[in-house]
Amino acid sequence: MSVDDSPVRLQAVAAPDQPDVTPDLERLYRGFEEELLVPLWTQIGDLMPAHPRSQAVPHLWKWEALRKLAEQAGDLVPVGRGGERRAIALANPALGGRPFATPTLWAAIQYLLPGEDAPEHRHTQHAFRFVVEGSGVWTVVGGDPVPMNRGDFLPQAGWNWHAHHNATAEPMAWIDGLDIPFQYLTETQFFEFGRDQISAEERDTPRRSRSERLWGHPGLRPLAAQHLTAGSPLLAYKWEFTDRALADQLALEREGHGGTVEPGHAAVRYTNPADGRDALPTIRTEFHRVVRGADTAPVRETGSSVYQVFDGAGIVTVGDTKWSVTRGDLFVVPSWAPFSVKSEASSTDSDSGALDLFRFSDSPIFEALQLDRKEVAR
Ligand code: GTQ
Ligand code: FE2
Image (tube, rainbow, N blue to C red):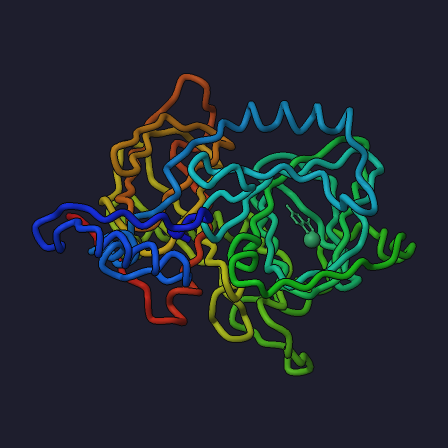
């Protein structure tokens, strides 16, 4: 990730721990170049830094700007076979113009007009949807139509067939998160087109998916269910449950029974009800609520995150960068960059009085490889 694509041009340099720059040394370095060899001593600072030095930079995308451009794309760009999705990705300004929010994570706004279908396909990339506003689209995963409403989180592990279907008279926007950059870098991707049209039954618009009816009961595992595929069998985590979990944590804290990660900061992780692990194999997903006036301790972690403001407003600090954020805004926290927030009222918000943040990260990858590290300053 930190190795750039241009061939290495070896420079003999004068430095205290380096040999004198002589014609012999120059010849040695030209010899290395001809044989495509690179000596460690010229690269060690970049290849083996004392701590992660991310190529990605902190960056903020304002929801209003994204939404407006997605609407324009809706007017001008059809959705169909080939392009597959009207999804517009966040491109970190330090990642060479690639559609990568971070070195491992894809984040995009997707937009579907009334009556439109995004055709069926499947891929090894693990994915999710998160809804910050609107409703009316059903994502059909493995033949199961799953409604999408504000606050809902919908994981969809790799290799599941999926299509999206707008069954209402309103356009809808939502965000997608995928591990596209990670699989691009590790060269592990497969992709297949599905049917051009989904069936009439798959165009159903139930209030709850079959997956929720089977797996969506806290602490109750269906005995009949075989769950053999990767990732969560529960295809939607509805807002009412997330909201209640966070409200309960804060109420417990007020009553003196703990429950929060730090004062005024409630948080949950979306987990797989079949095994208690992350809802997706490569992507961790969380929801954080910081009550108005509270701030969080600066944290830095290996691996990168993308956040979306779900509600409220506040000040976000990532390393030396500070932003005012409001509903829908998306921002990136690079590996090992210290991150903290302060929940503050803004002139425009009309909310519950807390800063609500949806977060996704690549932590499961690094936990599996025992490369996870975390420091909390406070
Ligand atoms: O909705 O299936 O943003 O396959 C990128 C790739 C969305 C999707 C994206 C995808 C999808
Ligand atoms: Fe897809």
